[in-house]
Amino acid sequence: MGRKINTLKYLISDFITAALSWTLFFLFRKIIIEQLPPPGNSTIHFLANIEYFIGIIIVPAFWLLLNYIYGYYRYIFKKTIPSEIIQTLKITLIGVIILFFTLLLNDFVKNYRTYYINGSVIFGLQFMISLIPRIFLTQVTIRKIHKNKIIFNTIIIGCGTDAKEIYQELLNKKPTDGNKFIGFIKNPSVKNVLLNNYLEDLGNLENLPELISKYKIDEIIIAIDPDDKNDVADIINWLGFSEITVKAIPGLHNVLKGKVKITNIIGTPLIEIEHELMPFWVQAFKRLMDLSVSFLTITVFSPVFLFCILGIKFTSKGPFLLKQERIGKNGKPFIIYKFRSMYIDAEKDGPNLTKKNDTRLTKFGKFLRKTKLDEIPNFINVLIGDMSLVGPRPERKYYIDQIIKLSPHYLQLQKIKPGITSLGQVKFGYAENVDEMTKRLRYDLLYMENISFSMDVVIIYYTVLLLFKGRHI
Image (cartoon, rainbow, N blue to C red; front, side):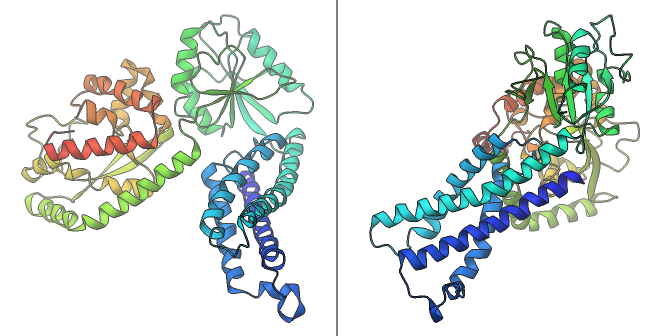
């Protein structure tokens, strides 16, 4: 709740300051640039203008959208004064360029010098007026963290000398970083457990997903010896699906995946692992593509929907829609929607993957599987937000548990949303057993290492191409 309220404060502040800066800029244009006489001999009468009223709604909304796309409102408790200045400067520069070419390029000008003046004034007003309350809000938040009014539930991974020293240093630090220590997780290579007298033993790494959910963990501190390669590999796998803040002692950044930034120049030596695979603005455009393509597909192919529904109802008993639990981003289960292609008792003996010449498929179901029409309802999952157009295919927990035994790094795939198609589907095709799922995994991991908006477009192109060629993917 505290996070939502603080985010709302920034949203309200940004809307008000954007409206104020646009109002002052509007008056500047009318009085200084156009040198118009004020209506009714009053400057305030300039604002009784339809152009102003449209701008006062559209422009602040534009700034809020731009800040959202940039990711400004994501980590509301991790802001610092320097980061506020840099972020505000970048966003303002981008926003002014967009506004200049959309709203100001055809504006009244005496000469080209007027363009520079307008651009400089709107930049200065927006930057300074929005920055001041942002710094105030951020400073208030920092003070609350230092006074433990805002706390972060924290787990330490490690139990040796490094873990003990980091714990004691953070516990005695003044002002505090807001860490509330819940307990520690043992790393197998350490024989002498030194944190037993200070914190609760929460078990091993296998307990981590359950602990994160149970205690609503905000932060994890990794305090193990960088030479313990096996322990590090296990941590990477179990943290693969987590979006919480991960910090580590210096020396681990060479083996932990992700970008690194220093969290404190003076004080406790910790580095923060930024495990975002894509900048937030790229994620926003990816989501926009998901929504637009899915909505267009469902609309255009609505007759195909009807054809599939009728085909299923007339050729076999049971519902036309299959609802099945799959595991999505961050290991969260969701219900996937598909057109039913099998008889209703197909899995009475337990989960079983589809194989060639599978007798469980109905006659119409074979056609649906061959043409991939059975997966058209997946676009509903994309609209809901459980899936993306491109991403690793979602699997059932029954199979994930088996895959993890063979390839523990499968958990890395849960960093992103599952997809309707993937690089694994395009390069490898359909997997009929767990071994083939494991082989397909390397292509999905390759996608994650090179994930981008342009790669999604390429994968979608080849998916459509292979479908037209009749290859089963």
